[in-house]
Image (cartoon, rainbow, N blue to C red; front, top):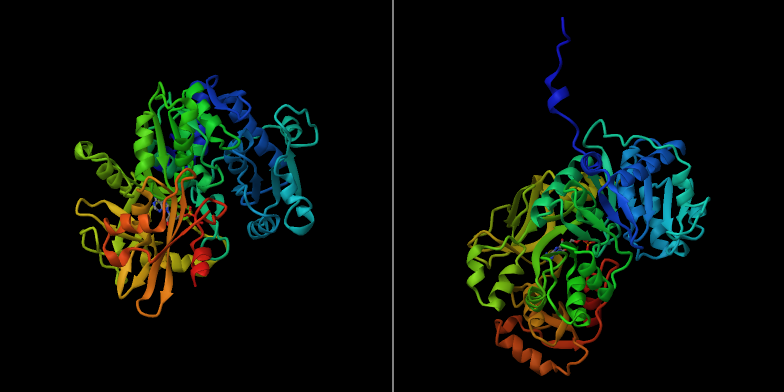
Length: 529
Ligand code: ADP
């Protein structure tokens, strides 16, 4: 009698983004999967073998399922292969932000309980002596420059390792990675991703960005930020090509876009703006190929959208947070927007949009959990339910419970819903300004400021006021070439906004930023107190 099989053997396989690399190597093993920061080319089979060696090395070191391995490195081959080799050994990847201080590294490595730290030679001084200070650490290994023949460091480590097959997890809910949020709100929190969530969000990104086998993806977005919004896995899923970039120098990035035929890149508006600023170095001629820039982290400015479209660069606007594996809303352009004036179209594209294909539901709700009317003005909190919402905060059941109150992920972002169903984020909960009983969404005021040609960056915060409770104050970084005045900007705002929303004061200068490039409003609020 033939053995009776459980259908689940055939129709249930744990979801894991590791499968994408196996497939890429199966179908186009000799095809170039990665171009490294130094311009070397690595095939899909080559990437798979390197990841297998990394997994093998970790197993030889005695690491077991669930152990954490941290990597502190720029956007290059070692960090990319870590996204496969580390989970392939059953371990959990902790990709560290490259802009932290020594003390912050000590803190997050301790919170993660990292057993191994892999560090790029250019960043090694930041973690000098860390092994003695983080008790969980057993091994710190340095990645040398690409052309060095180091026997001690990472290269030798990989060369002498016996490759181990990349193991799919027994349970797809096993942790894949831990990403620390930068902490514009409180201290760093470790956000735990699962294999299942990583798999689903990566496929969602393939759809949002329209990645295809002939796409070329430029790594302008840090891979340490939500695992590069899951593009570390999405680009592989599409069988497209990763083009590494060790640091984002806009002139160099523009050159690579041209030379390497880049079709896709991601980043925060500041990256987009820096490309716009330096496009002159390329004589502003449009690219030969169609390029799509997926922008997120904050809304892109209307000027950047317009300027980029002149270079033949399309913009897709994404919204997300570390807790949602990166992007979870996308501003899908509606056909009727094409006939709008550029300024109006840019304003529509600055909306955060609708849920991505992998997100089940995104609502804007009142404190009583009722949906706000879709009128474009009633404010509520954006809450999300999705297979791509984090598993939990590491070792922090209280913060996890608070984030999941009512059975939804609370984003802490205040939004409106427009009559067409599109969501627009207006503020973070704690950044809303309440003046004379009226809510002022700082983002709305910032958008109007950013639409002024002389304004490069803007942030609006509350200043306590004896009469109104709070009043808005703006901080502006003007374009270097401009001599724009406070009176001129106030006039510009009064022509476009209800007068109670217009800042009482405008201060000029550089804006303080977090390590991920977000404006530190808390610092600005202190400055106006
Ligand atoms: P952190 O919270 O540490 O700054 P995150 O990357 O998790 O790091 O930040 C997520 C936050 O960024 C969101 O909650 C939201 O406030 C903001 N954000 C992300 N994308 C957008 C966007 N497209 N438009 C406006 N705000 C955005």
